[in-house]
Image (cartoon, rainbow, N blue to C red):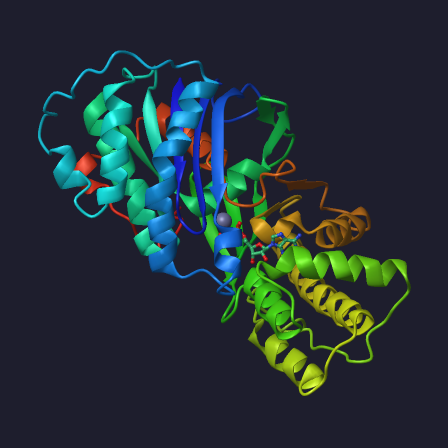
Length: 392
Ligand code: KG4
Ligand code: ZN
């Protein structure tokens, strides 16, 4: 079965076509037929964060060229121009009423490319920035109408979890070895969540951040010490240099909620503490490295401690790390170290390199499993929901 995945929930626009075989489990295999992504990180860097209205405009501008790129990668060649017939039901103009730029680019692409061999279109419907999500949703609706292909609504967080369960070699992949229940720690710019996955499609929230997300803590503290957005990789690079040089910060930052008997997090205090430690000072490069190390270690301490405690409380011996922050090498190593000393936790899984941050493969994959279960949405029922939750 061939699935076209679409992702526009935050600041990455992405399109991916996969072919999958087998059901969720050890016999599942997939091939990436085409995969394209446009990151807006550099665009947003000048403003120090993602502004939804601007991100939406970038998605509208970028998504059709990405689909064209995927067509080229799969060898779908242009055909002589054939004007689109009127689709049954809704017109393209109605579906893309709020995306005029997208419509302007999409019509000529569809007129010069026949219907590709696709069995379903999977699109992120939430959680995320609602104006951004709508671009992907409307794009999926338009393609579904023109090609007469069903659509599957995908939860972005399920995408991160499923992605981390995969092993990838070049352009093909399969599932890693793991056992249910799986405990997923999803750490990104918008989320910090501990989720228990009992089976594909069955999720329970164990804890979440009460204020800033882990990625947000990296991004905001980075800004305070003069580093550009996105702050995570910037802090990570300096923290690692500080460790290599044996440089230790004079300031000790808090480890918020580390001792509390629950699985929630709170990272907003970190920003205040960094502000206090650095206020009125011009930091030297060494001082920036030292404080970066302390920021990274404070976030890692809390994430590791609470996750390991939740794994033991719920008898989960598989821990999955997903979301942009899980690209952090130090955090991954801290988990690996800690788990090597735990009797129960045996599998530590994280996304293949390059797939921790948002992409469309992570949407196409759960889309495939849901399409197999025929969990299609009617085009007019497909709506974006910024606060979408995973369910049991
Ligand atoms: O999952 P993602 O691409 O987007 C969403 O927020 O959904 O995550 C982006 C976040 C940003 O906050 C960024 O600073 C953080 O992931 N990040 C990292 C690293 N790479 C990206 N944080 C720490 N260490 C990294 N190496
Ligand atoms: Zn994400």
